Image 1 (cartoon, rainbow, N blue to C red):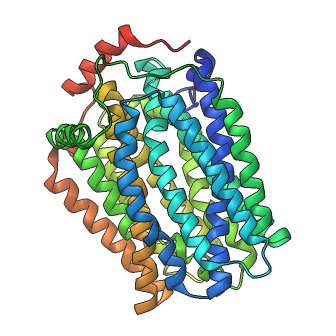
Image 2 (cartoon, helix red, strand yellow):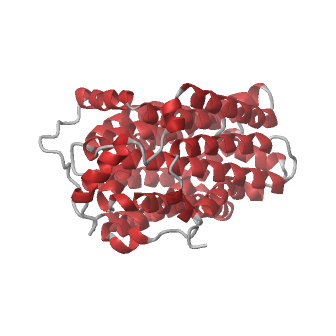
Length: 424
């Protein structure tokens, strides 16, 4: 059983990783509360599928633009300063949501405007945040650190929406936004204690278009990386119907279960991560990425064929487990093979695959529900996801063949980081 026990070594050996882990857990809990509250408030004000799906639509452009720029900044300036500045910006924006929610008649346009600005802030922050881990733990602990980060995300995705649902029922959107603001403040107090994480490459180019283009050229030479981005984009675009959960809860005559719908996938993901000791025993990471994405699509498609709330929750949990398997091994391929001087820009591109994909997925699912039916949106999305992932694996064999024991990129980084890591 010890082979399946989660490895806590990064938390024991790295002080800074502990601070980053706890900070991320706190802020993600709060962000997931707002993630539930924002579409809930739009649905309450409009009662429209399209209006809820439009939140994702307005978030796409700033996420792309600022995600790429944020990746360049992550390779150009101190990543600690970047994360702190954007965390403070998010605190201000959530506070504005709180003020709007306290108005006698909340303004719908304010919700969309803040959604745009939060998306831009997230785009600027995530590349620096994602690029920190490889600087804080030794190369041989990256698998364990990645699993711990996914545990953190799973816990936040379970507890955050559930708490959000309770807060919305008890005190409305204002209470939910207020709690999120408090979590941002607590997170900043921990991030402040991190050591400086300036660029390690001498003469690093300033963040500009040529710097971003250099990162894209590097990505284009790595067919295995391109495969991970493609699989994740396909899975999210076709099978991410979270915008429909308020309507699904109403159709199931279980509005009280809205938080459970948002949390169910994370429950399945948590089951995977709490037994993640097996991850280090798997070396064909590319195949795990593909198989996990196929399981995600299957689970989401099955949601559309049952009228039972409990089977819906079970299928969502199955989908979440598959997505977590895919996500763990995508992260391993990224963190074990990309040079630190390129890590921020690659994190910006990665963020587009796992963040823009869900935004487009919510738009697709909302549109499909309007044109067909709520159930058909789930079923068609699951089928298209599985077909698309299978085609991506067939047309990008470098991903399917990826093995960390044979990858020249993984071997190079293993040698470099053996001497460069300073986990403290």
